[in-house]
Image 1 (cartoon, one colour):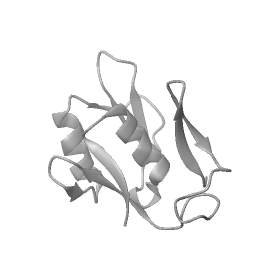
Image 2 (tube, rainbow, N blue to C red):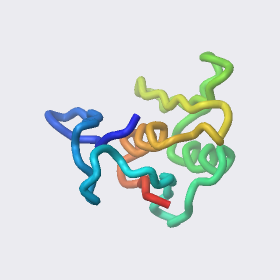
Image 3 (cartoon, rainbow, N blue to C red):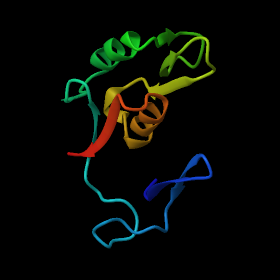
Length: 110
């Protein structure tokens, strides 16, 4: 899914027609990384991500699809679902984490 995420009327939406800052339509082809802002470190594995999320009150959720790595934050209904293989972890998953953990994570171009 290429495009630009737009926040409008309280909702994040993908706007594939928007131009990126370099003037090209859609998002750049640069690889994205998830950065933990308090430490400034790039999240490079699910074990490091799990450690950070559990410290923020998230719990592993085991009652879903066995092909997903999931976290739930009680008492909310928030659920983070990630592909089982970290190699398939992409910017859509990263932005889901950022939206559900404001001021803790940021997505950057590598």
